[in-house]
Length: 510
Ligand code: NAD
Image 1 (cartoon, rainbow, N blue to C red):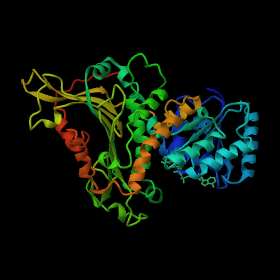
Image 2 (image 1 turned 120 degrees about the vertical axis):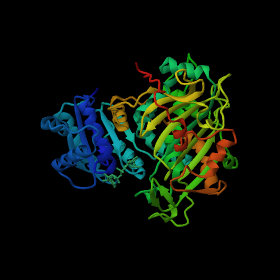
Image 3 (image 1 turned 45 degrees about the horizontal axis):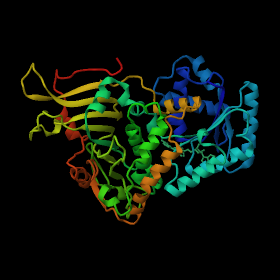
Image 4 (image 1 turned 90 degrees about the vertical axis):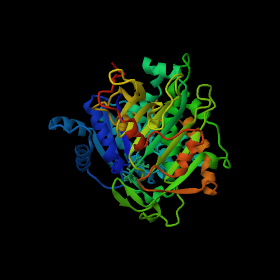
């Protein structure tokens, strides 16, 4: 890895404290930081280097997934790379001071001037920071430069295009690393290569017809402290346009053998381009817009969305969205992709379910075993991680009757890196595979734009759902139109519950 100066805007913020420092510490433990590494933290507050290092140490002691070792010398070595500089985004002088500081660190440590600028600040600062990096000369050294930015990337298609155009005045596309932290999750990183990764998956993908794909990201929490932001974003901007469509692209970016060496980014772009567009008028037939009402989440009574602190009592904001999407692609033609995401749902889970059509000769479901009558490939992305195949089979030891089985293709792995470790490690190495590329972002916004407009014009009715439920009844009805149903609710879990002694463990990475 090449020598790097990591310039962190928003070094006193919440994300830095909870995610970025713990990720850097775990990369350090794994020997995955560049051997010559300097970090300069930036914030508006005056802090001494010592206080800053003390804050970073507290953050890793509180939030690191691996316990901070008692080896004081190792912690000291990690913290030794950290310096602090006061910077107000709008003050040009501060950038010149920053440049002086970076140059003197580079000289002191004999670092090639490779600079990674990480923007862990509000989106209103993305453009001015990029422009000031350009203007101040911070981005004109002999080494490489990279810009890592957090979400959100725009709030609709025109604003995303505008932001991108402005960033491109200071950074080329290959220098921009847009974080979508779902792409850092280990299970998500496996998705795109899944059909090629093991004979078992190859056989499933090529030998079986896929009936539907379902992608769910359910949260039990409400708006929490983010009322101001969330009430102007909703589930469609906060989750759907970015994380959910990225999950769709990762799964659908499968192409027939022969093109498999095409870069993942190119295949993801083809997947999002293949999404059949919806017009504003068509949105109502394919999209369900929901908002939680009062209810009980896991035994705790909670208020409805419009009674939450900071939320307008008349708000028609969406806290739930379900949609049916079709891809005009030879492999996926006729296979509906169902996506749903919501707050205050019955359980917390991010999961993809691939439902296969029944094989000829496979018994027809009876009324009692309807829930287990289909073959499902279930990819659990969080909080549990794993890949399971759920089906029915005859168990000759028991009886001729078929029973539900569950095959673990990838057991819950221990010691998995966090999303931010994977992503920061990749950005340091210059590998943009698991970042949101501009084409993907632009096409996602283009698909979502008519739905935003339909919501704004109230063309898609707002459906209330009780907190602690599976979302509005219309979301079930959307799938029922095609003879499908959601497979990821707790009811199905019980139905598919594996019976004792009926599990065939098979680990895909044997
Ligand atoms: P935060 O409010 O906790 O921190 C913001 C940081 O920006 C602070 O360090 C603050 O000093 C700095 N800042 C604010 N105004 C400034 C100015 N004028 N000049 C210089 N610095 C200034 O926010 P956060 O939760 O750390 O989030 C940061 C970014 O990450 C946001 O874009 C957010 O959307 C995104 N994000 C956060 C999370 C999360 O879990 N917190 C998750 C995903 C994305």
